[in-house]
Length: 419
Image 1 (tube, rainbow, N blue to C red):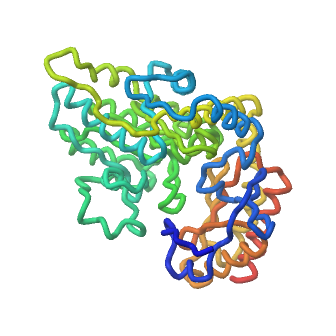
Image 2: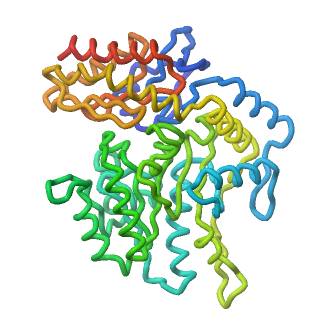
Image 3: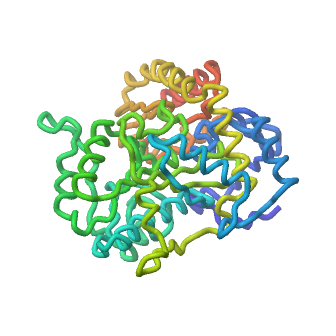
């Protein structure tokens, strides 16, 4: 069959020989049409926390598909979206929240950006229109998201299209500034009169190369935003639901964000669904009963999709019943211990760890060998997607000890073979 797909994040040269045609998934594995299995070591773009074909999520999807396939949430509700909004609010530090649902993480970010800007309009401070992020932060590929997050290696063609009035520098700890927060404080203090919100990926900048920073920085950022009347948006799309060893990455810092963006693991990757979770102190300003209409004129066709909500409710049940977050934290320590010997390899620049994220950064001179390492791992049945000279493990949280140890060993041996 001719491939007519315009593949995302895929070079033309990589398309010349075609791609595996995945026909089913089971546990941590994907199977192609030749019945060869591959370890989904990146959880299908960081989404499939419960692996593939978990029977309880599949059952929930199938059951809902026979009851109600689609119903808008503009001036309507349905049982699943009511239940999910209540459930999500209960996962936050305080339950005084409302959720805007969408279909993907980027759409949740778009909602968060617009809510933050309109909030200040609603309360009579219309000059606060800037939403800024961290240098090389990633929050999606829409133009609005690129205005707050911008990865140079991905988004160069659009740099003249979107505005970047300011950026928080990636934190570099020093003796006098152990969390590296002070340069960010200076940016916020300088622009506070224009800042509607700051948005960050908590503790780890994924697409920038799994660049990690401390929970202490995040705590200081939350305090600084509160002191300067700037909303804080936490983008948990990639890091949420146990990936970092806690339910949400922001839990490591003990903060209470104004807005939280969820996606990917919300449905365990089984259905497109995301949410922007908003504090009621913000939500309550969107009334149409005052002198001006503050209605939030924003939405998505599939916002709160009934089948997607069914998948999310099932996934949340499983996370709790199977102790997924707690088990992930235990597995993370094992993964770290199994990976540490790679630090001794001559070609390894650095190892980094955050929960069930394990990173092997190779030295710059290995750049010409990255594709060969990736291809060799692929032949061995491992689906890695390196970023620059960095290989990372971000497997489904249900991976077994033996499966995880096998993946670590395969990566180490392959790096040794080529470097």
